[in-house]
Amino acid sequence: MKAPDSLQTGGASLAIYSGMEELAAGYDGYILDLWGVIHDGVTVFPGVIDCLSRLREAGKRIVLLSNAPRRSHVIVEQLTAFGVPENLYDGIMSSGQEAYDHLAARDDPWYAALGERCFHIGPERDMNMLEGLSLQEVDTLRESQFILNTGPWDDGATVADYEDTLSEGARAKLPMICSNPDLEVVRGGVRMICAGALARRYEELGGEVRYHGKPDKEIYESCFRCLGIADHSRILAVGDSLRTDIAGGENAGIDSLLVTDGLHGEEIGLARGETPDPVRLAGFCEAAGHFPNGAITSFRWNGE
Image 1 (cartoon, rainbow, N blue to C red):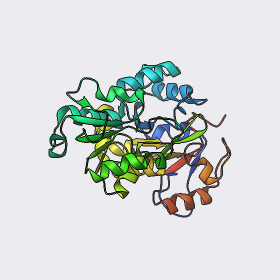
Image 2: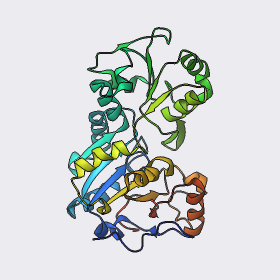
Image 3: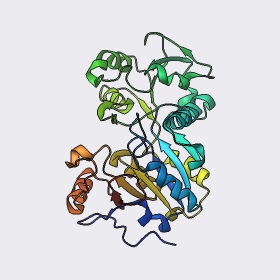
Image 4: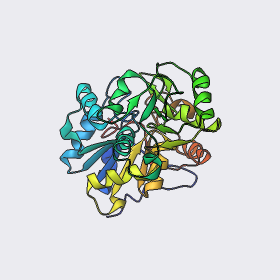
């Protein structure tokens, strides 16, 4: 069965849906972003649990895909604390888990050549990225053989705060692993930079970066295996970022749905919960170079 005919790709306007109920018949599986769709880093958005429950009752398969720079089991624990039970999804994949798996396996020439001495840029909560690995965490770039970038050490930091560190690493030609390609995130209503912003500056300084996560096609292959749906036209990616979620859907060859209450809400000029104008939203997406198959204000079952 094909996706709903009302889903439009490109053109002068973008289909706006009041809820996932309108789309449920057209898809068997969903790849859902977490931050900006399911929660804001502090609490689960209204209507999310109900929507997940209704999709599960309808027999839909669900994978949660996050650019979080931490391993999947840590995200499961966080979601459980937020009140999202494990029976509402089939699996979780994260950019952090993908990076960790490569660090553990050393399964390609780039990773095989990294060495064991790691300089970590990131907060204490991301130390799970080093657990169980034969790595030596070092305190200075001079001692290190590569950089693991999971984000800023402190919330509220700016890229400029890391200029000296990034410049030193680039001069030393230290390869960097970026375990979260997002540039920024909105946590509890406050915008903060992510690992991707530091990695982008590192590249500008001449440094070499290996990215993991959306929008790279590789991480979607893990999601497809978990979903077990052969016909990928029956899978919908849902996210709030054109650069990662929508571009990722494009790279993976599946339909995508943009949540407008998330990362781009302020840029589009929307108040929270406000339904966007389809023509204006289409222009915004086209200017960004990534066009979803439709949009929804928030991840909910219907507009009530």
